[in-house]
Length: 212
Image (cartoon, rainbow, N blue to C red; front, side, top):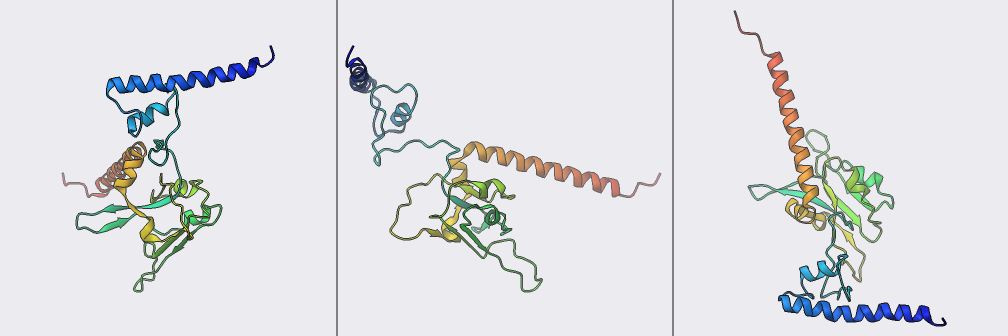
């Protein structure tokens, strides 16, 4: 039949149109907000969504999955005395593996010992060149650099982030990636316990035997 395909497509559109009002009525009777709420956005983003499923950006935003990645940032721990412990040791591995070469690190040496200071003097990332691949975070041996969820970075100037703009507390990383944070903390504690057990065993073996 001529035009049967068009009628089928219009039927789908018509059903989607009325499902929107039916779903809105169901949510309204239940006292929940289908729009402008985290629960509503999560429902419309799921496979159970009926009717309209678009998100009214920027009033509404999609709930990003934990593994979503955009731009890198550096992690620091907040110490009890108010100071911060930057996890980055300026080893330069992230800059070496970066495909577009958008990371620059300035490392300084201790004037007394001449050894490298295990903290970057300066750290720059050209966000306009970053391809969001995540290799810097994957290869970092100290888990000091991670990928952020922030993607709203439009500006009229070049986005070159310095050290202060890149630094974020570990609590922020825990908030956006709770499962990864818990797994990394468990691995770190397991390594520390294994190291302590090995040191105790070595000390016990090297201790002089008690006289008979």
